[in-house]
Image 1 (cartoon, rainbow, N blue to C red):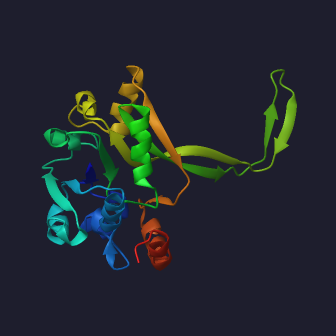
Image 2 (cartoon, helix red, strand yellow):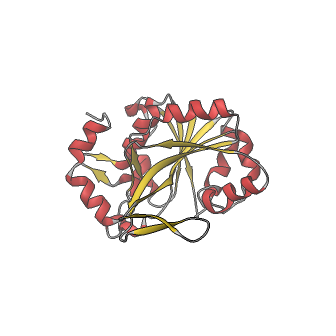
Image 3 (cartoon, rainbow, N blue to C red):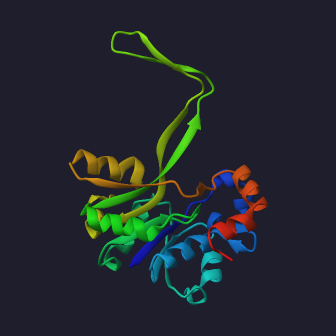
Length: 235
C-alpha cells in the first residue's frame, strides 16, 4: 500500500524552532518527528511513501534520502508555493493506483493504522478519517433540563467528549475528482463530499495522539520522550 505524508508547512506556531528547521524534522530525543510517522506507516504495511515537501525540504530529503535506512521506498513531491492539505496531493494522482493513506508529518500517535485501512476497505466509502476521542472538563457545574424546562439533574464540572480529526486518512483514488488546487481537506473537501451525499467513514480510537502544534507541546514531550519511545515501540 502507498501513502502520502504532508510535510510542507512552515510550522509558524513553533517558532523560533522552525526558523531554521522544518517542523517534521524537529528532534524528539535523537530522532526527528517524521521518523516516528514513517515507522508507523511501515508497521502498517506501507512500503512506498511520497513526501509532499516545501519549506526547507532539503533537510528532509538529505536525512531520509530514498528511505533505504528505514526499509521503505521514499519519493518527494516538492511544493513551490503553499498548496493546501488537499491541493498538495494533486500532483501525485497518477501515482495512486488503489486505496492509499494520507497523514500529517508532524503528529505523534500509537494509532494502529492497519486497523484504519481494514475498516476503510470494509466500509466501501470514498474516505475514512481517524478520530481521536478527547475529553475536556468544563470549569463549571451544569444543569440538564427536560422538555418542559424543569431541571432533571446537576452535573459538577462534567467532561465533554468529542472526536478530534487526527489527520490520518484513507482514500479511494476517486478522491482526486473532488479536490481543487489550494484546498484543504477539513475546510473544503470533506464538507463538499457530505453535501454531495458521499459517505465518510470515521475510525474512533483512544490511543495516544498529539499534534505538536505549540512550543510548550514540543518542549514538554521532549522531557518524556524515553517513555513515549517505549509506548510507541521505538526502542
